[in-house]
Image: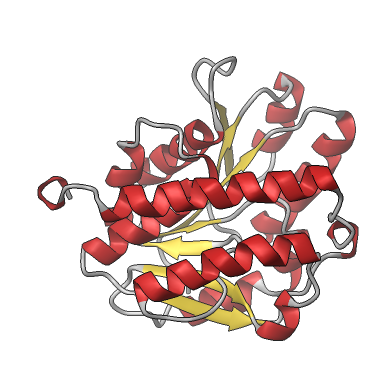
Length: 245
């Protein structure tokens, strides 16, 4: 099971508390005995050493971290994954500890049956989505509607983790502008343009208790910025020249 599957993620620990949270989350990832590659930005060298001491984990700092971006971290992790010549790559943010512990193995087992492989996005069902803060639901609902109309499948696209086919990765590595979180919508649009399926795998993924209060003005602004990045990424992927795919 999970033959030649790589897990790609990123870390950015600015405090000792963030180090501990991200380290224990990554520890849950390695329980599946799959290779994990991590693009890190601006964390302490001691934290990177701690990560690299975990079995099957390769954590690498981005080049020129003082000017690096979220996209740089993603590209660093995906480049490391491609060096292993994987059959599939599972991307996730590192803040999904409960998902890693209780649902990741089952999710990957279900995805193993998806053929042909394109993109399979882990999606919250309607009941789970309703547990998230109102401001987050507002912007993510708009993005979900746009993605549903684009890819022909209605549902949630914004939970985070997704499986992608390796042939999509070169287009992600070639991104030069800073799409921020919009790199995800860009990747899905590229898969769609390549004639590969974009699927949703729905499940019960409720809001973690520590995130359910994120509805203050600062978090709402952050969600609006994510929405703008998603629109930019989706549009960029849809207009990418077909002869360069």
